[in-house]
Image 1: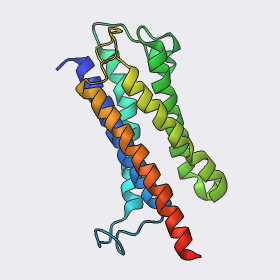
Image 2: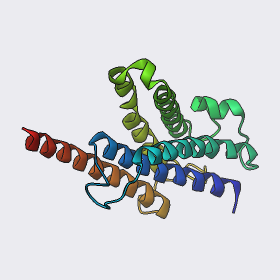
Image 3: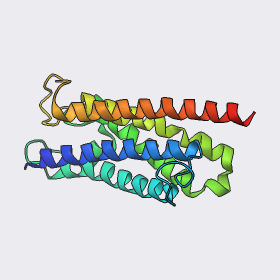
Image 4: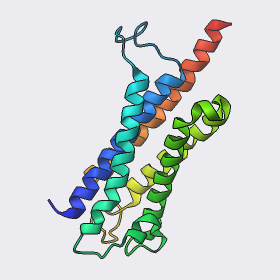
Length: 187
């Protein structure tokens, strides 16, 4: 396993964690009760949501830092922090960095949600969708070997990212429909 493979694997882990975190967040948003509904157990989905968010942030930070140890391309810390002028794939890397920075904003504001107030905090929290778009676009467009090769949408890594994107889209549609039906039943 090379440094590039390790970085790509950590990036894929980040995509899976982002997918899980968004899906769990949608359960919280629609006030899903695992006690009343399936699996009929007391599960603290808020704690799981916080855990996946911390793991997600860790994996997103580690993903580019691994590149500092690459022998094939010379990466500097500045190339990772502000990848507009990174040695390879500056557009794709910038999109990924924007996703990271948006996730940092969401996590920081979550720690101050009581001070911010629910409405203002919720507006910040919606940035997670923009961050997810950035993470998915970065995952689909970036060449894991950093050679600028053409995108193969049927490559295993790309299929995983595309599948996660589909899961998030379906979960968002489900949450929207679930909330509408719940509101209708309350009337």
